[in-house]
Length: 481
Image 1 (spheres, helix red, strand yellow):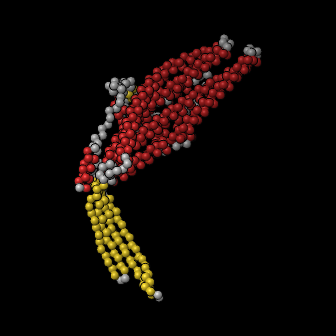
Image 2 (image 1 turned 45 degrees about the horizontal axis):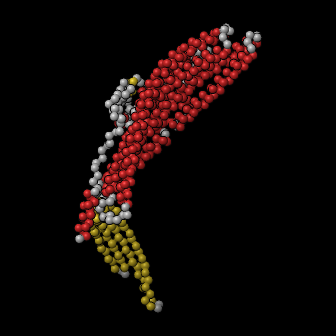
Image 3 (image 1 turned 30 degrees about the horizontal axis):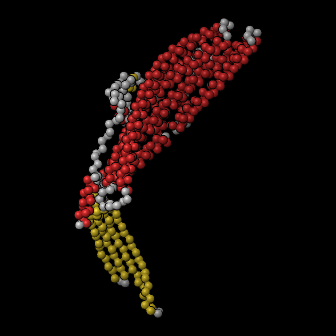
């Protein structure tokens, strides 16, 4: 009767343990996003896994290689992959039988006092050796789903590590461009300061002969001091960029400066066009663009792969929680040999046992059902995380495309502004030296020229950074070999 009740309970629990196979959910894209081509895709992105090499900048290539070789954040991501790999190995080991060996040896002495003045001492020696075998029969798929969950988490951690490499490469490339742009801006400011110093000397000579009022000299001194103050702030920003690259790559500051910083310009104090010509040649120009970027390029994005694999692992956890509420059957066997020696006599014997064991959870106070509910809640959270991740990735792609378009247009317009501002400043400077205009009018055209030059440098920096942002947003990762 008891066996019949156990069998009936097992069949009833089996009926409620059905777990459908996991299938990846359809990405919650906007209804028209999947079929609408977008504004641009970098040419030949698939031709090479190391997308940053398309910038054609050897210094950036070397710094990214150094960052991959020595970066704590990336090392942490790799360590998490190793942990997940070990966890998958532990889960896989549950599929196999377990065999344990045991051995022991004991020697004891006992003394028996039979009467006054008489006693008996007895020495006893015993030893045994044996082996235990056990194997759980995976009737309801608990072990199978545990292995599946561990493997999916390994996939997620691997995608996280790829995402860390992608982010690290983008950070190094972006900071390298920022440092170069900062250094060129310093050269523009240095040329401007040199020009102001020359004009201050001319102003003093003109004041000495009584051609201008003393206030003109004070105005020139003030403008020169303000220019030097702005230059100090710019130098601080350059130092911060160097420090950031040192932290990212592990390279010393001197090596970073040697690889990235431009040589001092030979332009004289009245002409900075050579600096901007150097900017146009040294600052990397990203590859050309193609007119199509379908949503399918996001399919292998590391963030989406990680979120989807985590969702799949959470689904397997539900199956594991359900299987833990069902009966378990395990096979076990034991073989041991024992030897005993006492009072000159020896006894030895062997013993063995083998058979299945059935364990049926009857009452757990609701813990099993709560575990299933908890696993279901984690799955729902992972599903929401996947949806949020996809929306973020789509937004990042759209933002990067907008950034790319803006940067391309600003490079062209800022170049035109530089040409016009340089011609205007040269004309105003000639008029000032001839006494046709005041110092205030000259300063106005000087500020326009400097603003135009720094806008051009920033536009060239943004042109490269926008392309880098697009690579990061679309999940372009490097593929070894």
